Image 1 (tube, rainbow, N blue to C red):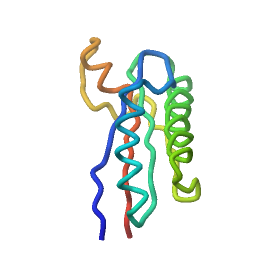
Image 2: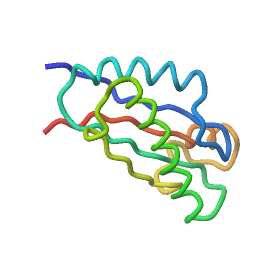
Image 3: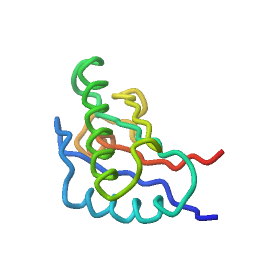
Image 4: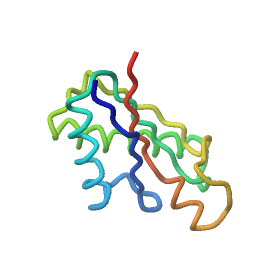
Length: 113
């Protein structure tokens, strides 16, 4: 049985565009997950700035950006589920760029049952 680490990729402020670093991290994650069983959950997150509605939408767009890249790497879209938590589940608390940059992310999780 293949065991894959959960991965997180980070985004610029107000963006759903994958950085070069994020693309590289996702390449590594996709290689492991292509050999593993289970569903892939893409959890979109934002920092605290913006309205709840806007942040939920941005988190979803971020998760969909990750999904498009993973599908392009050969993973089946039927294995993936995108969910947005917006600003509701911060990785770090704090109202400064150091915290915000950690909260603008998509977490890629392999779920096996």
